[in-house]
Image (cartoon, rainbow, N blue to C red; front, side, top):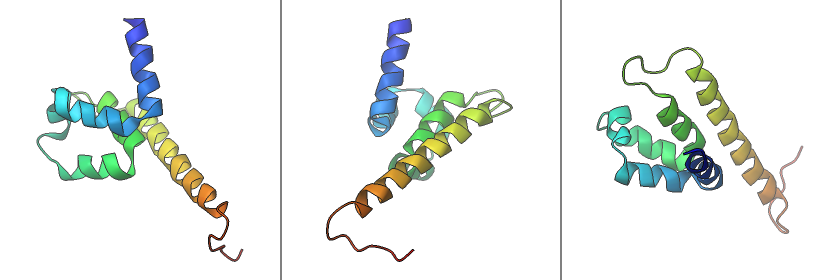
Length: 102
């Protein structure tokens, strides 16, 4: 079971959107967490996949998100911000890409 958990963690780190799409197709938890809503999860898959994964993993059907669960969601937000910052930084390195005046 430990190997399966490590494999899932590796897959989430490697391709969070793939994990979210597989969760939407095969998981019963998807419907429990989002309650049949499709708009917010879609935005999460597109713009904030790490935050969406952390929200799905932290959410509890009885209490929702409480206490230390917020740490994991904030970690997901920080991972998403770092990902978008890295994308912007990589674009600045492309030859011929318009440079911003600093």
